[in-house]
Image 1 (cartoon, protein in one colour):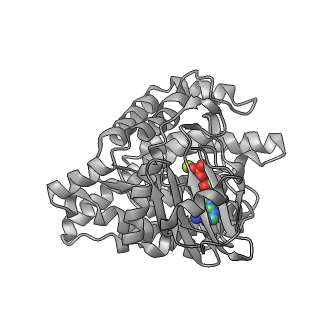
Image 2: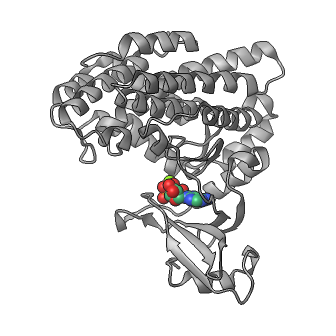
Length: 385
Ligand SMILES: Nc1ncnc2c1ncn2[C@@H]1O[C@H](COP(=O)(O)OP(=O)(O)O)[C@@H](O)[C@H]1O
Ligand SMILES: [Mg+2]
């Protein structure tokens, strides 16, 4: 079964469990997803359009590439499991899951009406530190309440097996840690970056730290990790923020979430090269995220907590560097930088960003506090400009 706007009205009337629409309601659906992997539809009552839900449906392939690019639809089963946990632990930061159909791979969830993707605000230079506070709380609570040090070993193992999402974890490992640094047909980058890319690929110190981080990514079992927490996975409205798109969720190194979040603020930071006020706000948002994360991360033993947070900080810095680099030279780029029309400026921004990302990866063992991180940024972010 593959959902489309034509067959959705019948589907809704068959799936009584959804329970949102009356039996005689006239239903319409439109595709709203701008995502790459799955179909996302807004479904509403024609006579009362404010009564709406969102359906997310995973076909057994990658949506934008077509049916010959197979990918297990189980990714939606993991997304549904993540939504269950998020709805329980942080209902204010996740869309409410109304229903999941395991055979059809369909999630029905709350329609985040009037919300939009956070990335677009950052591109416009609109930075609200409250959003970082919310996302930091989302991370602190979901990471600490599922953290192996806060659970009995059987409880931690149960999370690890419910979230053993190894296919999606493998895809991330390939596209973040491996492919960007070898010759792979999915890589692309701006003309003029060849020599920088060549330097990265030959930098043994960098490659060994990438290996080290990749190993942590694949083997460390700390807590429930969203796995794709970039600024395109956050929807905002005013001061409110919700985290979506958890199909890459796994039980792993939780710093991967903070790393992706910081990295996407930093990609925006590097793109806003001529605006000091925007850069200052982006830096504040990054600092605020850690401040709140530290405060909200729950662990009774203070010494243990300090030790756990120190590790998370170092790993977050390393993952930040990885995400920054792969968004410039791998298969998936970000609009913050792709949208720069002046090619000379774009190239200069990319050179500075790549250099900074690579330095973070190489030095993540040395950068252990937010002031150190910010000092490092200030002394390394003007290169080439
Ligand atoms: N609950 C929701 N309410 C409103 N819009 C949503 C909701 N979930 C997703 N969207 C929209 O659909 C887009 C794609 O959803 P996403 O979960 O990221 O799909 P994919 O996994 O295919 O990338 C999002 O960028 C957002 O614009
Ligand atoms: Mg997705």
